[in-house]
Length: 160
Image (cartoon, rainbow, N blue to C red; front, side):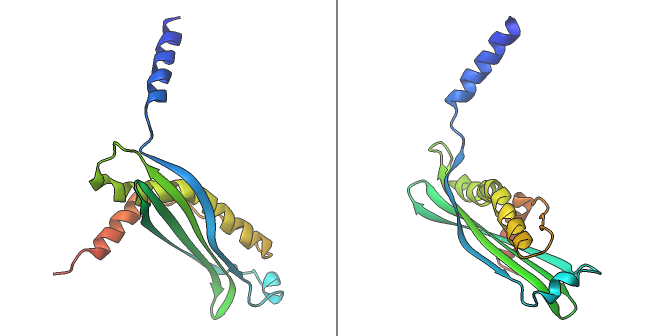
């Protein structure tokens, strides 16, 4: 009985807390798939092409405590000079930042947590586009958006 009461108290406390960031909308802003050598490319997968995946994120204010977080994914499959496919998606979301979040924490919150929440959906869009293009679905590995944010900040730092 005591365990149930403790669990109920924790549940009540969690209900009163507002998450620091919530997605109020999400959408595909841009989607492209190119299969330039079809149908010949579909039968020429041995050895498999090298696949390169580039990911970029951005955020911009929409007014008040609302921001657009955007994740851009570009996947390219190539072997030598031959391109098998190019798949690109810009997947966005409207992020609402809670009132209690200090101003200095808003940019990292939106640039890290926004893309982290959007990534599974962008990943599914790419996987479906590649599969619908006639290739095995491309399942992109999880991304450390905190490390990506730190790398972006380091690249933007002034050089001595």
